[in-house]
Image (cartoon, rainbow, N blue to C red; front, top):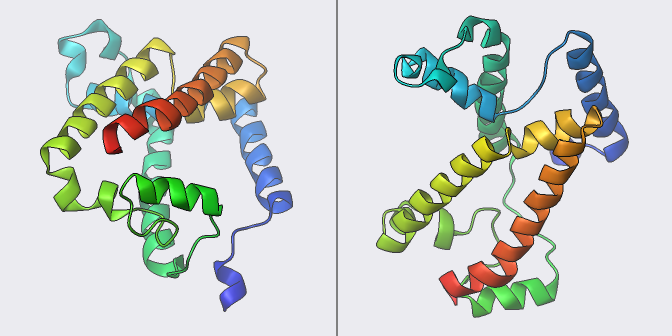
Length: 186
């Protein structure tokens, strides 16, 4: 039973992702999660207020199955396939996180210092959620797509704007974790 709970090897997961991308490209579809948010806003009536949301959302119904799959997959992964185990983090990373106040670095995928209700409902937690949500929303709109759309669909179709966006995502992540994160939690 324990072998079932291990991640799929790259040589199985990678070709499966490529097969899905080839299928999407063949049918003229693209993949990305931010387009689903746009579709949900349109369903809710945002097209009456803003031209950006004024489109035929029914043409994107197929993509809403991605959201359903992500919710179901997350539920299955968390409640049926997760086993509590220590992560094999680099000791330097564990020490750095401990210095920032993370008590159980490497003991959980979702540290309570970030992902508990108590943390989220604090002034600092709410500020992080609001500012982070704004930055993600602005960045997604400015980059004309999200990380999954650019990194999976855009790069697989050799789009230069997607390569530039993915480089920007990585640079933003490096800046966040090395400069901003210590200011927030240091």
